[in-house]
Length: 436
Ligand SMILES: [Fe+2]
Image (cartoon, rainbow, N blue to C red; front, side, top):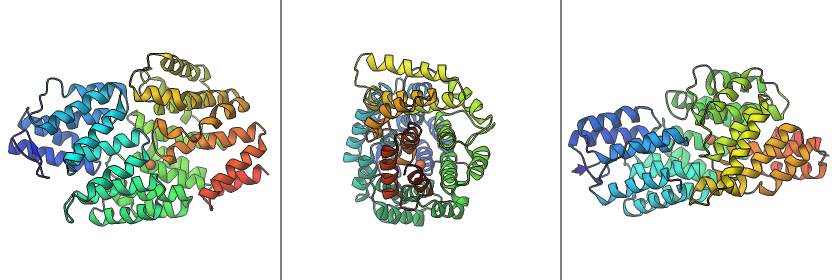
């Protein structure tokens, strides 16, 4: 028994705990070395439960079924010797069981006891992100911050989390202040850079967004878990500046290419970018076929509807409408199944199915049906996770479907709403002009 870098009691030899501390540091920096450090912790001491828990969380945070099960298997047979270790083991079990909302509440409870549990903060923040829980994306780091002494090495990373949460709740000025404070502590805090990019995205400031990412490139365009996603942000800024060629260059160089590992989190970014181009009538060439093939190779079990909706988009755009409709059929069957305390069930039944139907109708060219499916749930999309910027792909789909359906008045309303949020957005202006 010993204590981690924050002074929290945990099982393990001194060497194992030192390796665990390095793993948590890497996680906060979103660096892949988190894996080797966690392996090293267990090589030092196989009873280091928190290292096993960390490995389980890495699998669960993937948002994919097989990786989640493989991750959770890392804690099989593990026995927590402290209340905190036992609580983390319960989180892993509940998360794997499908009640992601309860898992998030259990992580809140751990932090109420130990607000300096960096692992609970980092993992809880990512779970809040998977759940689209803007209030807790802000609240979780905000509640913990007071416990963190100025000058503590991890405090800056908590500010980076807070910056992202502030942005998701629309508090953009405070988000920028927190993001810059985070970067003053750690220039390589990719999550803080990403939080600042979101502020520019939400305010419709693509030039400022690209300037930020170009200026910070040395700090994010490296080997970290957020490189692909940050590249996606750069590409959608380029799109908003009316430069689809640059967006496609970024896609090929950094979002999805032959070197991509085929993980859902990266395929989301690729799909989301190409679908925006698809809505604008820009051809993506053979890229859709490659992406659709990658989605088609994924297990069919409903696990996280946010991923399924992206699979549907890729299959439609690649001309594989029947397979897209098969995904919808699986979601329909899942929604009619037993109403277990499953977060994905809630997301599918409340808004996921409607969006899936709206996309399928769009793919068939039935734009009236697409609008009829998407419009009623357009303010409920957060239930299936991600950020406002990511979910915007379906708001854009609705607007374009309304245009194509000849629903000019509704398209005009949507364009007005968008311009109110992003007064300088060229895309919103073009949509407003079209809908007059
Ligand atoms: Fe993002």
